[in-house]
Image (cartoon, rainbow, N blue to C red; front, side, top):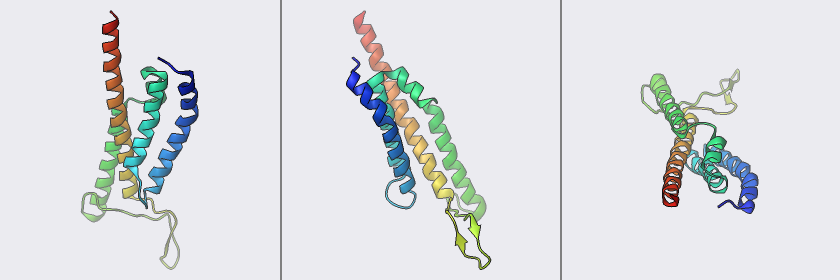
Length: 150
């Protein structure tokens, strides 16, 4: 059963939820939040599309298979761990290269490091895993509904 109100609200809410998801992810880099909560929020946006428009619309909105998204996240986390291992000899050791260093040796700029990359990996693993589970459950429910109709 499709609802015009839910479909209309979903078209407005999905981009807002995804923006909030990225904000929470970015904020969690240095404060509470991060990849896990951001990934859950992003998955919520796609779950809303699934309920409003159906499974195929949610898969089209996600653009990639959930398993591929989760695998990309695992790859990010692995690269993060290896980066620390190569630089300091410890797997998952935090590496913080700075963009600019002045003549006196002071570090300036945005600290984009291995911890951020690990958090990004967590974001994608959570997004891919939750969407994969939701899509699989919806697929089972729709198949059972088709069997009951016959």
